[in-house]
Length: 473
Image 1 (cartoon, one colour):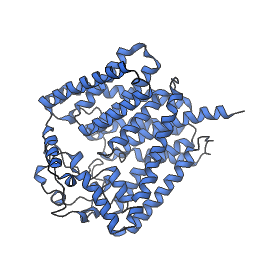
Image 2 (cartoon, rainbow, N blue to C red):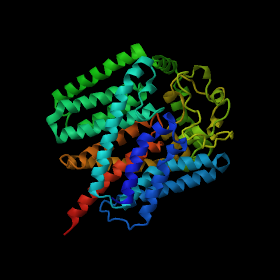
Image 3 (tube, one colour):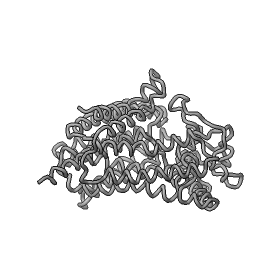
Image 4 (cartoon, rainbow, N blue to C red):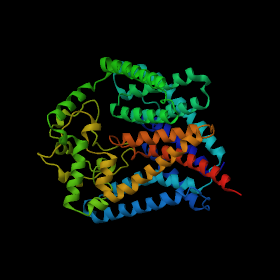
């Protein structure tokens, strides 16, 4: 097996299991939480030592050009707002955005044999099964404690990533059911078990992404075409979600008050004081003050990205951001807290963050107790604020180009047992990521995005190989 394939499988395993050994068992230092970085760049380096493979799809060159243009925008934004930039934040944010797509390009430049696709698929199934088993054993403790983080699989301290990963199992099972409908009951039980675990995490902001991605993947397989099937799926989904929402709401959930507070803020005309809404207004104000920022932004790590949240961490920051910091949820730390995911290796600064110029007593945000709603930080507002219209268009065009390509391939891969499970897993995961990034930092989470872009690369490599064979005389 080629070295880059072995590294790719190791990357998948470590992305899923490392936090158990660093954050929970603490037998490895937390710096290992970013092990995806050296592995990704090792694969990239290997790709430059080999001659690029013939690509009838022309995907690698097309995405490389867009990514190169985006890198130029990142450079210009940082240079033009150098006085507000903090180099560690800038470099970290650049890596978060570029790393997964560089991994994709590297894998397309290399030869990924179909045997490697099969190996990756086997390892993925084992890891998903492991997460489901561990999650089921953790579920009773979660119901007893009321703490949604108690169901986390091998992602301690990050149940949201656990939920996102096991959702891949739903997409995978839909594909298996399509290929082999004999064991419907068994496959349905797997899907139900996964959905139960996801709902038990009680991350309401992620449920929209789950519903949209699952519905779209089901639609690609024709499961929602007949009226009877649509009714059956609707009843099952509503019954499942309703039952467990009732359990969570009545016995374990400590977050229901947030919905009422959110309604009070919106109905009272205070929608612009919600962090996620205010962030876009602040981006527009930034563009108005410095028109060049409408094109190339304020520089990576400066305005509402994940890095701008983690690196600019000053005492009393919550008093500057929130008009009612006492209303922040006591059940979890505020979203703007600095990350300790790599054991303090992140160097923080007391330098004022660029986005703070848009806060005052009149312009602060209101806390309803939910980090997903309260905090102004999100990938999309971060892209607009830090890379402008040009950078955001270039970057998101890569995601949507891949999405449209894969969507168009789905009818042609319906009966291909070698790739359909990975194809639907990648497609569903991509849709989920794009929807959930409205609230959370999924586009900026390389532990998740390197898995996603690895899956996409394997699908593209498989289709490219088949196309190359078809193009031969």
